[in-house]
Length: 252
Ligand code: SF4
Image (cartoon, rainbow, N blue to C red):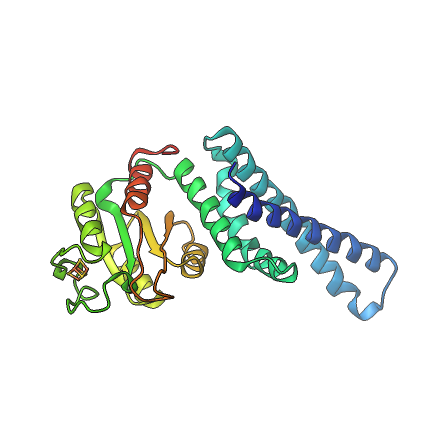
């Protein structure tokens, strides 16, 4: 297990322990009859936590077992993504309290998500895969309107877009270039993919994966040698690996 995944897994476990401690403390307070007015509210809260905590623990167990065994565990895998999505904001909050680097936590979340998608989301038809690119990948001096139509790129080789379009042609996958989160969501609604390979910064990728629900999304973080949102770059080899994982399954 690479250290990056461990960070987010550790935070998930810590959040779960905190939730359990909270439920236990509330239980004690209810029985100590801390104010009758609040008693029913706390009792309901504790009941909610009493249902949620075992489900979240099951999801976390599923994640750990699947990663250790390197194979999907169908009974528990359905809880895994929900557990990650539910606990993600709490893990970020906890990370902030401990002054952990937010980008490291987001990278860890993306890495863990990718691992689970590789294990559970393989054998997708390449034609049902959407490669979602951020507009900042396009060379800032380029005049081609690729957000309207990615095929407008003339593949001059001055940025990664042309190479990724050739990769998409090779696999038969679709490509969309989005100017932001709203445009990315619209592209997913229009193209109706079965799986997505998304390129973006760690912040946009983690929030996109968090919002994607059941749609499998493989996240490929871009590099920002010119600062954020300008002339960014990405490794086409990493996109190829993500496509191969979705098409062939397994941990390529
Ligand atoms: S590959 Fe060339 S034509 Fe295509 S977006 Fe990049 S700079 Fe523009």
